[in-house]
Length: 208
Image 1 (cartoon, rainbow, N blue to C red):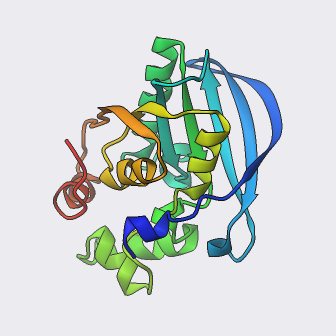
Image 2: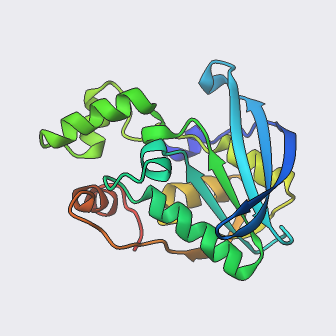
């Protein structure tokens, strides 16, 4: 499915809670947003927002897909944990910005169990796209509707986006949010994620 179809209809979200969250990068405002979407069978979709300073047009924004293995367990098979830390640090350095943590995006949207099954296939020689497809999924099943709804809820019309992923740029621009700058997040690779990063660059068009 092309990205325009995947993001053709933004749905409403509701702010459910707000609290201060002190981190090693500084103190952020933490907010949870919940909504529903037909793609998830009408189930709740949750976005966890971390903001610092004034969230207004042209602020720094990161849409970060949930990755338990990388973000929490420190897995070296991906660069997700590094990108999360780098994004929070960049926002903290500027003292202004927003990170949206997108739950339900584990393994490019295939879920934790199938993500681990995909790892087995990758160890047998498949790349991440081939492994996802071999398990009956699309190469990337993520959807950014909830994130877009939250950005609209914040009143953002233009942002500086922390990303290497052209699909995120396309999804936001299709929603009417202008990307005034694209801030890259290429970090040092290691022997465990070199092939994965190569796949993202060469087969998925991730920017350098």
